[in-house]
Amino acid sequence: MLGFWHQILAGVATGGIYASLALALVMIHQATHHINFAQGEMATFSAYLAYALMVSGVPYWGAFGITVVLSFALGALIERVLLRPLAHAPDLTLIGVFIGLLLILNALCGWIWDFTIKPFPSPFGSRPLLGGLVSSAELGTIAVTFVMLLLIWAFFRFTKLGLAMRAVAHNPESSRLVGIRVGAMLALGWGLAAAVGAVAGMMIAPVVFLDPNMMSGILLYAFAGALLGGLDNPFGAVLGGFLVGVIENVGGAYLVGTELKLSLALAVIAFVLMLKPSGLLGRAVASRV
Amino acid sequence: MTPLLVVRNLRAGYGATAVLHGIDLAVAEAGITALLGANGAGKTTTLRAISGTVHRRGEIRLTGERIDGCRTEDVARRGVAHVPDGRGTFRELTVDENLRLGAYTRPAADAAEDRARVFGWFPVLRSRLRQQAGTLSGGEQQMLAIARALLLRPRLLLLDEPSFGLAPIVVGEIFAIMRDIRRVAGVGILLVEQNAALALDLADQACLLETGRIVVAGPADVLRADTTVRRSYLGY
Image 1 (cartoon, rainbow over the protein chains, first blue to last red):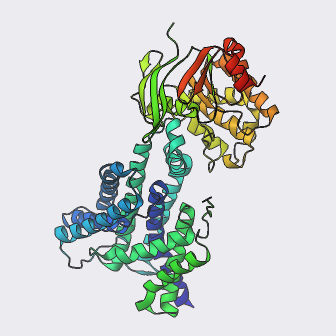
Image 2: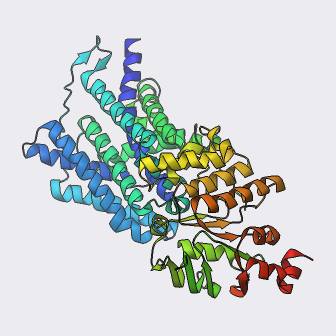
Image 3: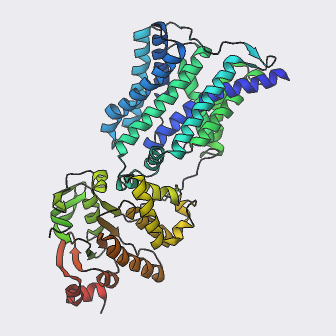
């Protein structure tokens, strides 16, 4: 029984990472109505930045903070430079840009830091806690992701800027009419998504080890989570991320084995699209044609 | 005295389709100008061109200062509040959040004062603060849209068919409030309205728009007496 509960908690720990990345996906999706396929690679790049900082002697939490800030700036820059000129471009163009960004960032990581797999430190160690129920790394990851999600929620719920960003996501046209600078809000949204992704990247890197492709699987879980919860609902995406984490861990341990864990994410995607395309908390959109 | 709004040779359209072929109009300080015309004449496009939500050419001056090169958010920041067709409320957000967004560019102290004043005109909104805006009745949504626009503390209010889809009694209420808003807040209003009788009653000046051109313009009383206007838009 202890083993089962441990699987659940380990699922919550990785689920928190999926939830963070799912939240980043949903934030971009609300603004652009597209899935940012490069979200995972952006997080990988951030993790490499943290790695480079730590190698050059910056302590863990210092590197963590600097990476979050740098990632925010890079995310905002990507919006400004790559996406602003494409505001009225057809869907396929945007998808092309996202895939291009994925390839560029992936290759850039390998080019700068080479393709060999590297260990990434965890600030929480890996001591077993509560009689082996949970490890200190898992507990630390859960704590960091919870604090971050709480901060993001408070930002959107209680600040004027957060309200303006929500307004832009719902109705950019009306946002302009009340004087909100929509362009700045979109850049801010990309920055936030990149910063959230950076935290996810740094939390998962000690588990999966640092390599340019470390996020490709994670992004799939995150996407499954976002879809399960509802692509248009940030709460749903977070809930979905946690659920997928638990499903993956429990299913991997008792059902399909670790080799086939990723197929569980694909199964979740397939079932959601077949049975409830709007997700658990998403809103079904009816449109006249 | 410089008029609040002067528009000269305004042209606008959607892509290759030109809708406005060079129109001139003006709104006096705390004046109400009604823009009349049939469907498709370009009334809505005129308001959109002024607020910069469509591409436009020509001259638009707000108290003498040119705003035709400004982006929509900057036009709003200069004190032009546009209540677009379809009302432009944030349906997914609460009434309170809509009002807070209306005051987005205002300092907090001013916003509180304006809010109290707006609740004086639209007391129903105060009891609906936590409600999602999309679930309000049509009349309440129109009131919210006007309230939100007023929280910008505008000098000029662009109103697109405030009577659209509303029961006559609600329309009467909203028009009475508009009269009061002009008097108390000193806001100039450019009013687009299908109901010409109602609009001419409220306005001091009026223009009749036909396929993107102004065909008659002048004091509201003169237009009310004009045979074309009477036959086509007042129906007697």
